[in-house]
Structure formats: C-alpha cells, structure tokens
Image (cartoon, rainbow, N blue to C red; front, side, top):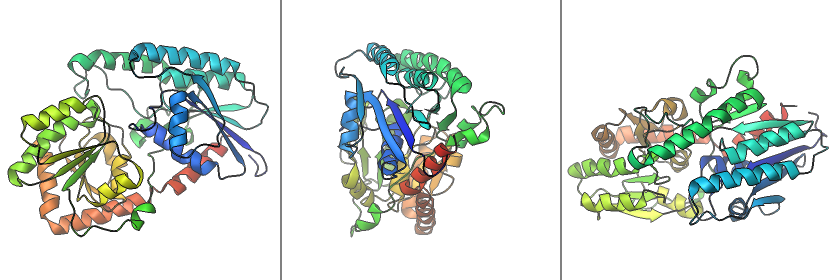
Length: 399
C-alpha cells in the first residue's frame, strides 16, 4: 500500500477477561499494539467486542477507539460453555450487521482461535471486498489423552471441548486466512503449506515488553524475594508443581521467599497446598498486579520462575527479565526458540531438577551475573515500540 492510503484495522475480541483480572497473551498483544498504531496518522483502529472487552481497553488507555459492543452478558455466574456459544452467536449476528466498509485497505484481526473471535472475523472477511483476515492462533491445545496435556481428572472434558472446537478453526484458518499470527517458530510450521500460506504469511509474534519503565525504578538495597512467579493460576502454568519445587528449595534454603503474582481457577488449591507443605512463611500470594506495582515486585526479586508444563511461550517472564532478573523454566520445545538465553532450562517435569537450577542461580554469583546479562539483552529485542512497528509493517505488506 502507498504512504497516502489509510489502513483500517478492525479487531474482533470476544473472550476478553474483565478489567482488573489476569490478561491473556492475545489481549496483551492487541492492547500494546493498538496503543502504538493509533499514533500513526495512516491507521484507523476499531474494535468489535463485549462489555468486558471495552472495560479492558479503557483500563489500559484505549478510550478513543470506536467500540462496537455485541455482548452485554457478564461472565460471573454463567455456565462457561453456554457463555461461549452465546458469544459466538452474538458475534456472528454482529458481524453480519456490521456496515460493509468501502475502504481499500481493511484488516480484520481475530485476537484468538476461539469460535466467538474467529467465525465473525471470517464472515467479515467474506463480506468486505477488500478485507484481509489476520488470524491470531497463540496456542495449540494438547491432545486430551496425550502425556503432555495438563488437563487431568475433572478438567478432561474442558480440554476435550477446547480441542474439538479448535480443530475446525485450524482448518478454516488454513483455508481462508490471509495471514496467521502465532507465538513461536515451531507453531509456524503447522500452518505453512507452501501454497496458500507461505513463510511470509505466518508470523511468530512472540510478544513484547516495556523496556523503558523498568530503568526508571531504582534497585532496592536488599531484594525481598528469592524468586517471583507471574501468570494465571491455571493447570498449564505449573502453579501446583511450583509449590513442590519451592518445598525442595526450602529443604536447602529454609528462609527462601517466593512471590506469586496472579489469580485463577487453581487459587484455592494453591493455598491448600502451601498449607499442606508448611510453606506459609515462604510463599506470598500477591493477587493480580500490573503496571508499576508489578515492575516493583520484579525489581524486588532475584529470579523469575516459569514452571509451565505446557506452553507456547509466554511474555510474563520477559517482562521480569527486562527488570534485570534471570529465569528458570522446564525445557519445553517452544521455549527453546522463545527463550533461547537468559533462562536456565530444567529437564521436563523434573521438579527437583528445577529447584536445583534455582539454587544454582542463588548461590553461584558468576552464573547469576552471566544469565542476568543474557536476560537483559534478550528483553531489549522485545521492546513493544519495535514489535508493534514490525507488525504494522507486516500488515501493510498484505496489500
């Protein structure tokens, strides 16, 4: 597209979690990019979303964007499956009613692979003559009976539902999307087929971090926490495993302190396990934190722990690494390219091995310093200003 042509980006965002709660990677990517794209005079941004999506956008300063609200149904007290299908139906109706755009350069971006995001976006792409569909697909669901699936017991049916609902969306994206945004390089090859979707049309977004604000926060004289976790209290994130890991750490360092930032469905189980393991004085649950409050906690921590047992990447640890702290994770395939440095990798699901890597960083100053240097260097490449501009240029190439 030429410099004097305007680009219209319409985001279809159905499953946003309300303001004040944990944020998905897809939401974070959209919000941080939209804030920066709005500064470009050649770009216009609109959002087709729910009440929760509007609340989330306003909470992060996206108040001047035109919002089209398609759902006024709250998520509290609602059956999750009923809410999912209701939002899908409402999204489809809204996408059919949305006025056809006469602009030459229109991008319909679906923030996730969820049906309430993807199907309305596809409908609008088919209705608008000049529209391109960019599909966000940030996590392949593990096969429900596979060894690596984090969904066990009562969560099996949720996993099965998500897996079965994702399969047709994956097929539709392969057949109809003009571009796909994934999290890591491994997932790119699940879409590249050499004919419709080429290597240039499947982009590993990874995410971004604020690299400027951390520099303005002074280092504390003494760090309060030996390690910090940030993320949803969700089976994929390894939060229950982290309590066992920290028990191993405390066997060697009885006063070791862990801070856990986040909330989620496993919060009650995490609290119960802390009590069961006798770690009430060693683990501090801080709830949901963001902005300066979150960065100050990172600055007060020595290590960031990323104990996810199934993951496509995750930006949260990179935010901590931008504050100058190295990390520890399991050696998951996706993390080999997502976090190639700045993070010690532990054998998958070896909880004691994970704990030993934490202790190594805490006790070996040379190892700590070199890994910390790697973490800062890696985070510099994740700057949101750079990443948002890169993605905007990628979008423009669609035309």
